[in-house]
Image (cartoon, rainbow, N blue to C red):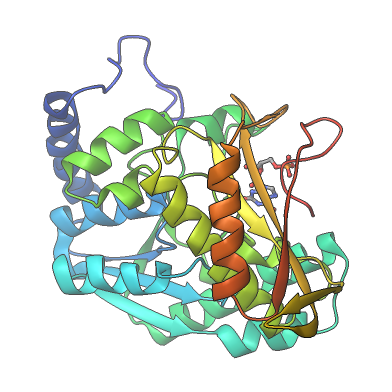
Length: 327
Ligand code: XMP
């Protein structure tokens, strides 16, 4: 049987009972596959890798080594949440790598979006590889491949965006416990595994993170402005019933300044762009009709709470003609 083909008889996991049955089945299968060997996992804190981590912690405990690379392009609170949930609550064997300076140094002065993506992807693999080489006795590599990844790849085998590309001498047998699941099923399983809602129902977040929302060449001041304004937007959407309703929402900060006035003084600072879109498949998208008074409240918060910002813009453009991200 092709192990990358979802059996026609496989029931869609929609309830906690079905999720628990899947979890029990996977724990046995994982123990069978792995035995007393060690498994390595790049744990970003996204829903797929988090569910894989939680499953493996249940199956093999300390024989799972999770590596969380903080590349400085994650959203506010994300690296802290990974440490809190996995190390403190689930007692995972977690290696936390602070690679912020390393990534930002590599990205300094690079304005071209695809070049930024390549640098972020390549540096991620390098950091992960260095960590893998420090560990003894790892025989398996776990990945959060899900069924759409298999369907969308030409050969039915996923080159995972994050850890594909490890060198020849560092090849492991793959462990992919959620590879036959659709995203909604991964979320049901994550919930049954006790992961927090804001991890399980998280909106999509691009691999290069805030790096493609700090437009042009990344600078630390604008990156902080993206991170802080994004946190305010998420907080206000959650408070006002838009979390879980709007497919994707975020802020971007361009690399030009405008004139403004604060407390009677002239300022020269960055604008923040708000984007909030709905889509089924990300191929086309429409703009969410965000209530105007909420937009005004968010504008007020961003311009008073975020440093180096004096304006807020709302992106009214559907896809096409725009893309969802600015870069
Ligand atoms: P665009 O901007 O192409 O985005 O309309 C469509 C969806 O893809 C996400 N996106 C990415 N995801 N790596 C990712 O993992 C990337 O480089 C990347 N670029 C865009 C974007 O957030 C949206 O959900």
